[in-house]
Length: 504
View 1 (cartoon, helix red, strand yellow):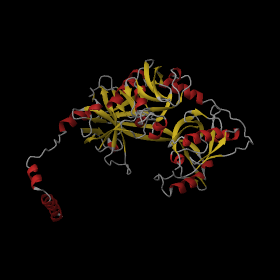
View 2 (cartoon, rainbow, N blue to C red; view 1 turned 30 degrees about the horizontal axis):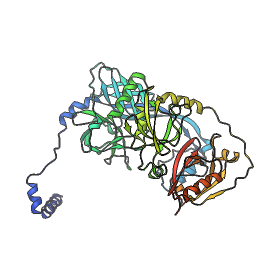
View 3 (spheres, rainbow, N blue to C red; view 1 turned 180 degrees about the vertical axis):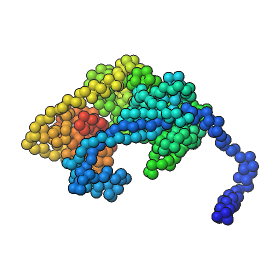
């Protein structure tokens, strides 16, 4: 074994020497070696600020009854596995025999103390979700009961409170904007319930959107992060918290060097609101937005793709009262240029409720400015949830036949909006236009997730009331030499713009 290892090392050195040019050999005499810091003192100072968070709770589940009694749980199979559909079909046979029950579950995670005097601790929302009992274990193995102060599922942040007879040690918030790509970081947590564990790495990337929530701007790191690290802090070289370790990308479930942390500058105001109010208090504009693609930008005469396209406006919301309309592109929020759609929700959320905001819009080929009185997101969501509890009655089936209008240039078939089609595709009464009845597989429409049952409400920002009218406006756009046409499409209560390319 020693001979093998020795030979391997020698081969590596020999290869290295063999490829050196005279210039490279000279350069190696005074190399610019990157400083690798030691983390011993930093770890000793920071470990007491990090805690283990353990929870127990109950979740509703079902027991499936087969011919021979209770079935075991369905295997956890990888998505797309050839056995996934087989087992699903097998278990579906016994759905009529399911029995609701409650199952006790336990969860482990991490957290960090931010206020020693008052015992406030920050962790992830998903660590304490559905918990009936929360306990916190300090670095010296002292276990304390914890109370949930508040949580926010949109940013995956939660705040706990403990009472300790012994002094606690708090971590210090840092500025996550100073964490540059390549900066050293230290992650401390409780992976797999082993106890306080320190790992190091660098900031691999910033502003990552992993579709975890509406305000994604994760810091990516290569520091080993595993299950149980959730809610633990990411420190910079000064020992300041610049992130909350939250998620990993891993086919195996273990660390592969791709971890994600919530930036401290995103978490700090959320934590402050949870402590002060027990909930978040976010600004609300009252619009649904979508990405401005190059095709959409071209259709709107915008030039470069930028801003956030308003797909729908909430009735009686702040934006509607200010005159914002679907089809507008929000280019600026106050003095901030909106380069990407996902920048807008965070800017609005972090704004003061009731304060006026200035929007710069792109509307029908020119810029306009409007002033909006921002509302509160939480109140709007509560009102919307109340409205959703009311059942919406649909009309009865109809024998009206729907003639299909062929729009071959887009690979679509269009039909009139009959009562029967409204019921079949759950199309709201306030949506009008031409319903899509066929979508060719090789079309741009299929690639952009246009589906049968969607309704074309506008063509190039002009309302259409029938399949014939929609087809005519699409044909006009093609005759005018446009490479694509902008459609305003409804799917249930959701509205969005889609720019479809004409077949060549």
